[in-house]
Image 1: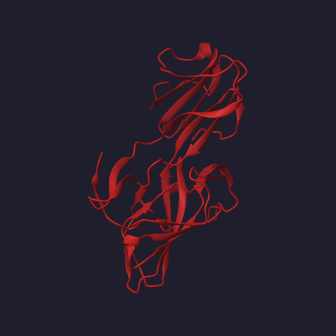
Image 2: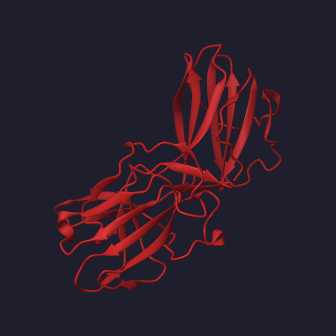
Image 3: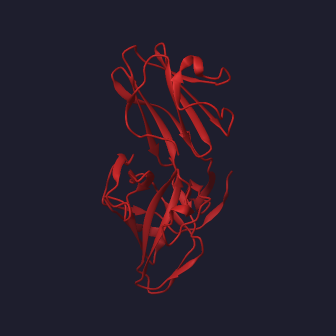
Amino acid sequence: MNLSWDERNLAQDNWFRSDAGSIHFALLRRHDEWRVSNWKGQDFPDLPEKGIREDLPSELEWERWDCSDEDLIVRLLPSLPELPIIAKPNSSLTIAPGGNALFYIGIPTSVEVHGECGGKLNKLTTISTETLSKTWHGDRSEGEVCYSLRTRARRQFDPEDWLAHDIIVAVDLHNENKEPFEFERLFLDLGHFSIFEHEGRLWSNACSIRIMEDDEHGNDITYNPTPLPPAADAREIAHARAGKTHRSTLRRAFASVIDVIN
């Protein structure tokens, strides 16, 4: 993943290129506009990481946003999917009454492009690194649309198990039932998760979820302020879009899904 999350200046008629997975994009400063182009695969394998306008392939198609001549600052930021996600474990696990189990989940990042407009940074566009399938969480009369992850939750963190552009979230499940609980799927709203960077990899703050006897009334979720080790000292680079909180409730966190929408 060829990305920097720090602010930078981009002079008139200059551009830079970044990569995330199979997605490539270029940001150009031209006249009084920001211009962004993105493509998939290896259409322009010899394109350098930066240059002047004359170096760019003529085949690139651009989205454009107005700015003033004095606006030079740009910044890329990672973001989590707008919809909640459904994650399944790599293999189902039964959690004993009073027991707990820690899982690591990898969520594909999106890249927000921010450009200075009128002296302040505004989000221009969001580029997804993967197209996620939508599914329905809950029953037919009451539920919500969410994304179904392709990757599976795992008990141990091994960097080789995750793509470089995945955001890793650690979820600790606590079974407060009197009976064993078989963990088969987890619904997770992402609004209160910030994004951190540690040694070139993206993490979110960790969380703990209480598995209750009556899942219909919700499951308590507690948010850590930071990721778990080995990323406990990670640098926060993107704030939670719904704001930080210590505790909230997940409605039917472990309910079944009906089917895949697309």
